[in-house]
Image (tube, rainbow, N blue to C red):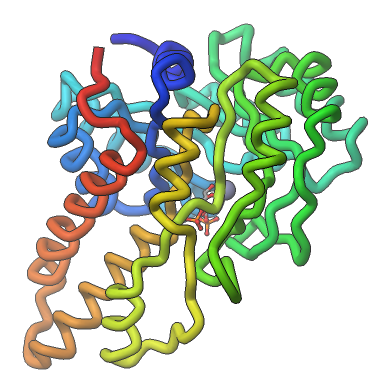
Length: 306
Ligand code: G3H
Ligand code: 13P
Ligand code: ZN
């Protein structure tokens, strides 16, 4: 089976991006794998520090072993999302993750370089892929939070990559984590992205890339939720990032959460006597599977298994 660096380089060469989908339960993981099998797309399954502690490392690794066996012909890469310390990155390497992200983006430049390099030197000894981040995304998500965005500086990106030897770079070009990304029009700084990719030749990563589909928001609001004003990034922008720019990994968490919660809220509101979670979960798995298929299409990642 080809490794993750093969696919990210292939994505760079051929104008597509791998979906990196966050999960924290079995239902979501199953849907990610099923959808990716259907579109024949290599897939990155991502766990945050929060998801890792929620699941517990033994449960997580058994789940991953099981899906890797169940989906033998599907390249599934387990990735640590936003590892904030050397210790958590080391733990992920020891557990057998395929790839880790060290996120030193909130640190001053030199400190980010130093800490990232320490993680890279360690992970590379074990042949593990390292994503790093420069620039700050606005938004809040569990352990990942910032009030204001700081766009990635293209010159600094060049220096950062050469000093750290990281394998891919997450950039801040206007997206943000969570369900409230834009007050007005959804747009990102393609001008900055273009300058970064002139300076840096490794695959780039787009975080905070959920589209926040309005049908999910409507359903959530209709059945007791309150998510007025939620807005995400236009799918056309994501396609452009994957096809015409060097974005090779697109991170999505929020959209899967919205899909799941909208389904549960609707199901239990419409079936007030039902108290069997399996009924709602089965519908949610189907809906999330469809969502993954749509995303892999948007990312131009269909039929990419080699
Ligand atoms: O970017 C962060 C991910 O969406 C993870 O979110 O830390 O709430 O699991 P979480
Ligand atoms: P969203 O909140 O836009 O789904 O972003 C997820 C993410 O970047 C995970 O690292
Ligand atoms: Zn992120």
